Figure 1: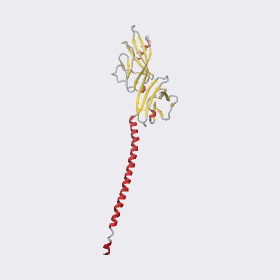
Figure 2: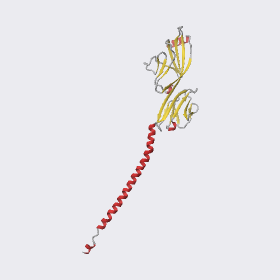
Figure 3: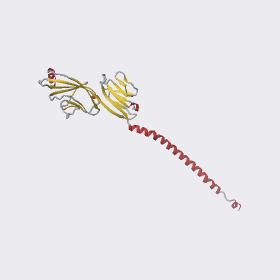
Figure 4: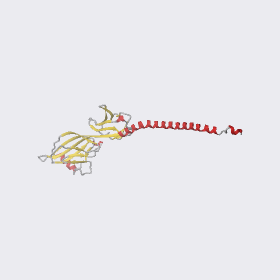
Length: 255
């Protein structure tokens, strides 16, 4: 049935207009691809990404993650990094002459996220998509390449495994903003990484706790030594008179 419907669409006269729209969404959130078409005579919509056609539910009550809203808008729920990239929305509608026409909208979906990491922890980011060409980090207002599909990672502190960019042991110098670009320099993903304040507080506590503990240990040692010296002197002072009192008086011996 669906195949026959496709053949029918191909046989009908259509008109196509292509408009590129930039869309940005937060990882884990929702995004709407607005069709910007007010006609209520739309009979069919199709959504495509680079991997292929996407199944679009007809309303948000569907169990799927992608559904139609209103006249022809498409909502994508629970965004992930893998959703970033180019989308094409095809809308088929009846014109005033009852002929079926086609309208095309293209979208460039950008996913952004914020991550807080503790110093020393491993950080794994699933940002190396099939259409990712390079990863850059913002440093002193300039973008510096840290990975590319042709040259790999630019630092021995980074690893790449199964589409993941991995920081072996996160440090304060790794914090910053990273972006993933495709081969046409279009931004796919932006991730802002900050160092955990909880870890910083722990480090600060450690910096002053250690010297305090050392001082306490030294103080305890000095107190113990002082007590030992005092006891020895006190014992020597009390033992000398006792020994002198044990000698009998001179007058008694003569008697």
